[in-house]
Length: 353
Image 1 (cartoon, rainbow, N blue to C red):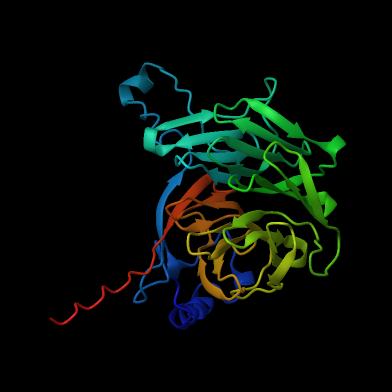
Image 2 (image 1 turned 90 degrees about the vertical axis):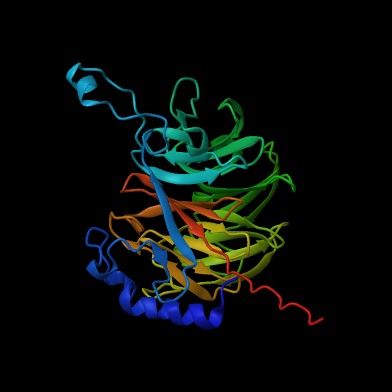
């Protein structure tokens, strides 16, 4: 668990160094003093987030070995998948990453087994612009904004079912799934609404409509399940996050537009870790920010740039069961992985004999 007393002071110290003002940061001009910071917050504070890896291609997942000099001289070609414009990411219970790439459709990456493959293939065509992904133990769910379609795949990449424009889907963006509750949350961007389906795409409820009141939206983008509470929705055009229970009843909201830590400029992906902290990506700031469920800022992570731990127009985010954090770093053409480091609890003192 984050300690508010220490991490809040660290977070706002970061405002002076890495985020103050955030609007002054240019993605192409990373701050020199923060060059390749690999842990947050910076020393001497205990690290709570560390950078782990980046995944761009088959080499990074260990699926391919680079050609030798002799192979290149002999003209041996290699068919290597490279990410081109990753928009979204999801991780299943086996640790397989599913990456929504604007140009390539859905790409599956399995670093543990050193595999990468083109996952989505609908009638011989790539699923266009997979802006949102979710995965559970049985299925993979993809939202295509350009096609106005939500598709359910099995783990082999076979399409099982879909909903689209005739069903009221209008440029869907984010998805979130709760397998135990048979619930799929679809952020229906151009409807300014959130639709609740079961996992077979039977519509349960639609909530929202355009506006600024509680429970209304202005171009919402992403969502995540919040265990024990319900789900959270990034209401991008209103620069806030809204929380709902599992039935879609409004609970509370937090956030406002601004260029300081805890505020939003272009909020995008959202995810939750095992302790209930909310991680919100901001495409304009080039970072993600960590909040508690009341909306209190705990820690900003990252800055604009192309080095490790830096971002250029980041978009989607996912967190696995072991608190591995995956961010779609769109313009840098990669998925970056981080790790949330739980606070070490002191061992109880031995009982005097």
